[in-house]
Amino acid sequence: MNLRMEGDIEEFQAALDELAEIYGCSLNKEGGLRIQVKRWEHKNLKVILNEGEGSILFNQPIHLFRALGLLLEKAAHTSTFTIEETPQFTMNGIMLDCSRNGVMKPEQIKTMIRMMAVMGLNMLMLYMEDTYEIEEQSYFGYRRGRYSQDELKELDDYAAVFGIELIPSIQTLAHLSTFLRWDGNEALKDTSDILLAGAEETYELIEQMISSVMQLFRTKRIHIGMDEAHLLGRGQYLKKHGYRPSFEIMNDHLKEVLQITRKKGLNPMIWSDMYFRMGSDQGHYYDLDAHIPEDVIQEMPKDVKYVYWDYYHEDEEFYRMFLQKHQSFGTKPLFAGGIWTWNGVSIHYPKTFRVIESSYGACKKEGIEEVFSTLWGDNGAETNPFQSLLGLQLIAEHGYAKEPDMEKVRERFAFCTGADMEAFQKVGDLDQPPGAEEGQLEPDNPSKYLLWQDPFVGLFDKQGEGLPLNDYYEDLHRQLEKSKKSVGSWSWILEVPSQICAVLSLKSEFNHQLKTAYEKNDLTTLHQMKEKLLPNLLQEVERLRDMHYEQWMKVNKPFGWEVLDIRYGGLMARLKTAERRLSDYLEGHILDLPELEEERLPFSSRENGYVRCNDYQSIASANPL
Image (cartoon, rainbow, N blue to C red):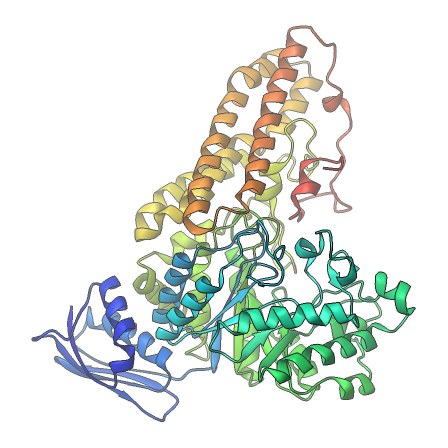
């Protein structure tokens, strides 16, 4: 398609040219559709086409790029139309986790930025605990794939071209165990992952943190973290100062950090959970009965934004009540939802859709203007963040309609990515085997523990016992292989989930089958398992590791892959040990297999059905690793 764009486009020309090339469009060509572009004062965006001539009316830069996508999508099917959309939020975007071993390569972040632009998302937050450079701290991010200053500056410049605000998200209290582990940091520690509040050395470090990142970003906004400091004041702080209420320590620490941000003219935000946890009798965040004393609220600084994060609830009314609690702080909160990339080895789309629908709906009704969704990578970043693209499309459509129509989500996703919505949703089915429950705050993740659990001393043998898991994953493997044909250039995204299913089609019921055959003294079955099943399973795991390696190296810096290499290496070694143990038993070298004689117990107090365990160490063995 040829377009001849005129008007208010000069400052956006570079980005328009890049998007036009991606979407097979030629700009400013004679004979093309003549499109008049005008930046106006109205909040809404408008796209008009009438038999070869049209116009784009927009307010914010991001609206121009979304409008271009809407124009190209619609003009491919009709010659006359009018599209008008009203943005529901002033800020709508994502947070990319760059701290759980997977540090996305800058060129892949640029790919994400281009996708966001045509979808209409205008904010990208980089969550960096210690994955950025501090000149004075050589061990900060050491061997962790930290971004260089040049890389972050280049990303900020690139995002700005597409109308996207790049915001650094750092930690200035907790979640710093990977830095605090090093010798020489004792003066900075309260506990193993919490900085020592009140210490001069702590605020020197925090000033270095803030100075290091903010010199690279054009925004004045910075997320300074401060979440999940559960043992605040209970380590070295307690020894030095004695007991003080957590409320007091938190407020005093925040005031010290805000002195730094004020001096630098910054607009900080923090996670809100610590105030609610300290006001809850159970120490819970989502406690509707939590009481934050009025004097504490009065002491809470008003020049910081509080971010309500909630990826769990599926009840719109709960979100509305908790948003109202946040508004009692005297400032309007930001909201952070979640696209479930941290469920284990694959995204969980059913949970993602349910929480986004309820939470974003609540935000609109409560007048919340700034929202984003997190793409966490807990426990090793096993899930490729590009599996989240359908989630990005969903939050984008929430950003331009009070109640998004799923058919429009499907059509927009097909245009923006070239992929089929249902095919991407299939990737979210790895944790939906027979018997999977819905409505849990944290969904079960059988695909992770079935993959990593030990073949001889498995800890999850009672979970899913008697269910046709092998058949389920074999069928899902076939479906994902077929779906590769309907996702365009993103077929590589489906390779690892599909191969996980190939592995699980052999491994899901292996432990139960092995123990049953052993107890029945079924030597024929045991021999077949040793000669055929275990070698085939080992071969499929090796294929999975190779695919995962290729995908990791394409998306992320190499640092962090060694953790997954250790997991795959451990699994392959244990499969070889299982084969050897069976050989020794079948050949009469040993008289029994104690691993198979011990009674199997449920992994948790929940005796029946699946469970959730997103910690490799807890999955691999009952012994310390």
